[in-house]
Image 1 (cartoon, rainbow, N blue to C red):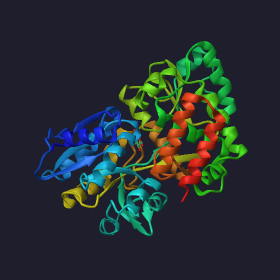
Image 2 (cartoon, rainbow, N blue to C red):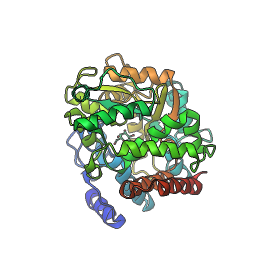
Image 3 (cartoon, helix red, strand yellow):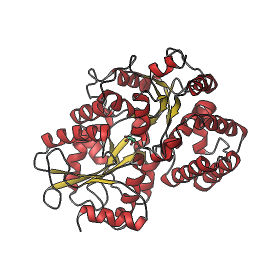
Image 4 (cartoon, rainbow, N blue to C red):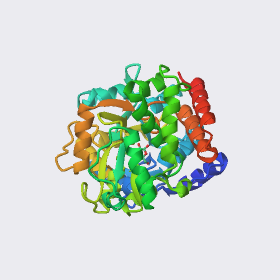
Length: 426
Ligand code: GAL
């Protein structure tokens, strides 16, 4: 079966509604998959600025390994939720790609515990990577002293993107800084009264993303981190207060949210239809691709109440057990880790390099702030992007968020979140 046929079969088997794209032969090299000396790279970076980032990495890979064909196995959409469904089926039927994208942290633990990815500790030793990646990242990649994937980047999740023109038109000072969510909400109300969308958002996973930043703002670093290790009570009054704020914010968002993904929600800010969007810093690539300048065309700062905290996530690449040509996968992993690969990829993707030897002097102004913050801030793990909790827990949180979005029942929402913690906490 061809890759497309196989993916369609999986899509039908899982019953999931998914947009499949670029399955096979969509590399910059114009390659067609289907045998020969190749490596299939499975990601969810299928479109827009995310694909631009992947293409930049592929270019470096092609230079470093001209004899190996890059085969694009990307499955679009949903910050990987659709890709992960397809991947799970492929891994179950012993049909792994050459490599797949996975988040550093708890998401990786799922694959390690299921025996689905190889131990790469010796590659780290042979290539000196233990000295090139920061300890804060290595510790999130490790399990029992072993490392199972190679990070391509570090992203920040707790960022607000704003359109200063929309703010001014609504009588809101674009230079205002907000110490708390309450301060911010007061201005969102002004924007609503002026007729613009105060806060743009998209489908379920972006709502989980917003929720995590609200929990972080209201509970603080310790309280937020305690949600994942059992020391913060999901059924307690602090979480109730945070959910009240989440309700207030969700009520300020665009009604068509369920039919959008993150690029559409960010575009509402770029186009001047919405004042704010909360999104990870892959959003900066969308602004830059459209020649928007930080400070004049758009603003970016930590979600109110989270200044001084870096809500962390990192993408990484694996060597699946049973990968068709492990030596080709290793060549891909070396390109991912290399300073050249990290420079090309991260500059285009909006993230900061995981490899500290990568040159960042010509990165954009937003990225310079992220580099500084990662070094100086307290670091917490993103749940929407696999760092804080295993996939099963995130799936349950996402269902609770989706259900709340249609019922508006806040009490039921909190008890479902508490049940999810009870069921999934390790
Ligand atoms: C995240 C991923 C980012 C970005 C984002 C939106 O999960 O780590 O690299 O792709 O999804 O799709």
